[in-house]
Length: 337
Image 1 (tube, one colour):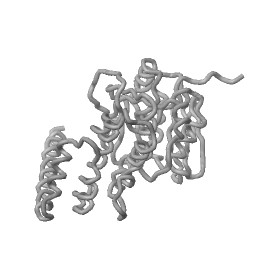
Image 2: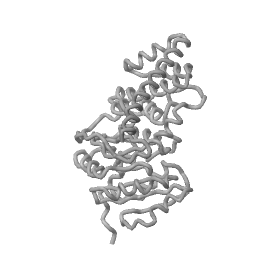
Image 3: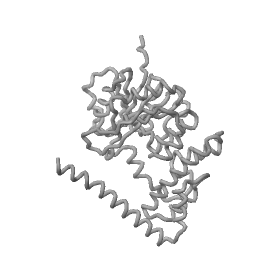
Image 4: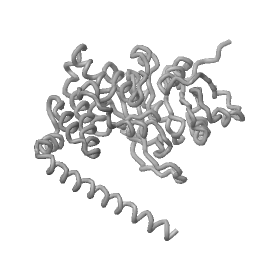
């Protein structure tokens, strides 16, 4: 007799995260919400990470091992194996607070029509021993994902999100990109399905473990090639095609707002790399209604190179001073302890 399907399936892609996988798995199995299955997909790890799970006897845990095919393939494999109608994702080097799945279940209860949902997420440095996050009311709501992500691109991340499995299958799953595959997939879902968020912080992203978000930052500066809006990122390329080929006129303004936010991030990155020519080229790709801050940056880029370089120097110095001022109080607190 086949066991009843759980309410939520959890998928963790694992690749060379031996030092962190047990923490991630423990945080799932310790959830107050118990009606789950946990699928860990070992994507050809070479560090023996799967061995950290060998002594775990929880019947809800399943380990699947496959040849290395990338994080997208690992997530897609986990979803193929999942039995629940909803699938929550967690990266192997992150963790959940004990109420995470309770919060996702509440969002699903209120908005079962959604294809994509997420609770709030919080970033901590690698090695943090105290998990201290702001206490926020749930404020569960439907949202325009493209507007939310234009304000904070990581409003939904790969350790805070859950997707409707049927919607994911219809959208085709995660595509295989070197970086940005999660943002492209959220955009695919958001084009055709409602999205709901909760402000309550229940997932923790650890910076400094070589995770997906850091890989995105390392690849932020594109290789030398002709500048075209379709080359900015996977999510931007998807949305440009959607505007050209699909019936998304009602979403046009919010999609353009999102695209401009991604263009702005590339412009800022190019300027910090002192690639003024690329910054100018990308700034010229902005679409529709352009935010005031972006307009000011466009105006700056019309100035001579020497003045642009001076502005970059001033900005970099300001960032350095701000970072130093933030470090000093922490150092003082450490000495007092």
